[in-house]
Length: 396
Image 1: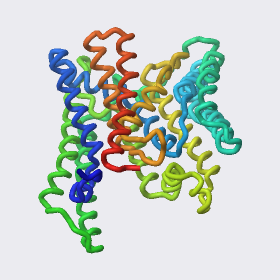
Image 2: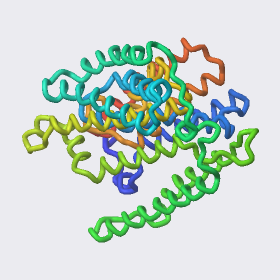
Image 3: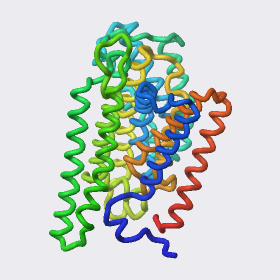
Image 4: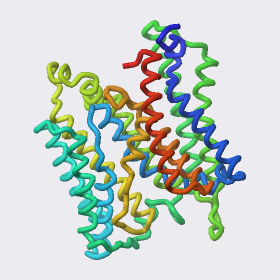
């Protein structure tokens, strides 16, 4: 049997791995829904799962690029906790406005990431070692910022960024976004068909490509309907799309654009494929590495803002253990730990799978010890699957 995916499958543009991940996510939802007596797929639970996944999802999108470039950051949870507590402290204790506090938090995150990136890029210290030290150091820094005290945040607009009571965009805006996304999907499908015809490349039958495009468009509309079907008892209107999920979607789109449409994205994948060859052809490997860590700092800050806005406070435990979920989301979504390959959309699916697994076990009252064992083993299974998949289909 051939070790390559069929040509017609490649021409459709459908990633077999992402399709398998989508099927797995649906299967998990159905199983957990049956075992929880219909609670898991209720609008309220799906709304909460979407919100809870956003923080991990935001960071996992950029973690894909970090791993693709043959690096890793084990300190993202601790840095997020440090930056989150700092932002909350500046608002509550120091009386700063939330935009100023967020900019200060971003500046600190950039200093931290550039410091770690400089050690990796300029001195050649493995990022694993650098960020392992950062995992401990910046968790301690989170305690030092506010002397171990929780820092509440009270600004109403800032709290909306975390979702919650007033953190939805409403039904009309949610439907508008769903229609816009569907139109974009079909426009891209027609653009690709014209491009293939222009270059005298074969096109699949129109009905097949319309069907393949209609499936994700239908998923978008179903998701919008679910979000619009959740209404808090004390409110007169449904919530609509949570703001954290909207932020996550924007981040994923921007990162996808960077990967597919910019020189920086091409450089990152070239570095992951072969760092020595990348340097020989003139790619500024050190500078790109520093830029990559700076981009990580920006999205860690965004995740910290969403997280403390959702909790209405900055706590010392913020982001504890998040590095496991972020790395697992990237790996489950098809990012090779050896570097060179990865998918932004795959990280979205990976984050949803990880959060759905955790939330489903929580609904079933699975003890925390067993949940940790299962989630850790899921990461190992994901890596094993990645190795076997690439061996089977001949991917690098």
